[in-house]
Image (tube, rainbow, N blue to C red; front, side, top):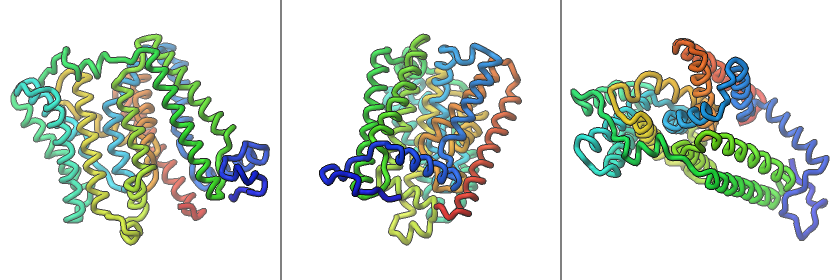
Length: 415
């Protein structure tokens, strides 16, 4: 839809239009067109999350209490960080089944280096993260040089790095991390003061609003449809009110955990990398069509290498956070449902299994859904088997939505 430049003064031609009645109708028509074209965005995830919260709050009033929500956010950080790496791989239309094993290996390296070998904590952390990065580079090399499917490569990695984790831990099996170390305090105790949280919220929303204004000005200068100042103001004000309310509510218990803020910061940084850099655009291009991306001059092999390296690095960081949260690393680190929850969170959050569609925020939304289900069922004293079945059902529903959306977009000719 083009903008009627005749209705805009010559001195302000590049400014976003105000949200007039015509603008409202145009925005509604655009929204309807996107929905008909299968572009549902995060709406299904947010809607499902609201339903989950309403149901659990109805059966247990403690669910939406500030203490339970604080614990929920802290539980999201480790698996959410791993899920963020899975989102990147899914954007390429690939998969990584070994993120759990890599996270467990990183936790084992951290514990052995810091506790048994008496390395400085910072060196132990670097060693664990570098190990994760090297795993991803190995995967990318095997995929690009030998053409092995990522499913096979990472399935072998799941088994191989699990064995390496057990070898690193040795006969000890479980290694405790000192509670007085700053990494454990970071994961268990550190919270932002209320005033600092409010400052972070205001600055973040201000940066978000300024980004929208700059984008609208660029689109107006290019004679494209753009958001008006009123619409930008309403969206920013709504986000500000929600975040301030959430910060105030969490402060009724302890405040906003620093580890959760660290996870959110990773999501935001990855979102900016995917949407504001040439590398990010190349990731989406390769996920949409490898051959078209190659013909456009994109170094496809480098994209695969970088994405798999980032995925395994984030898996290592998630493993470190999980070990710090538990103040220990053991043979069970990275096992159990770690793989299930990380991959399920990425898919439930909106990352397409078919590649080329999704965002970094899929990890944040998806892990909140996963942890909400887990927390709600725990409060109801239901067996973990129920949690697995419910999570599986939600995952199937998310894949169905993704598949239907993809077919609709293909039928309407939308990329």
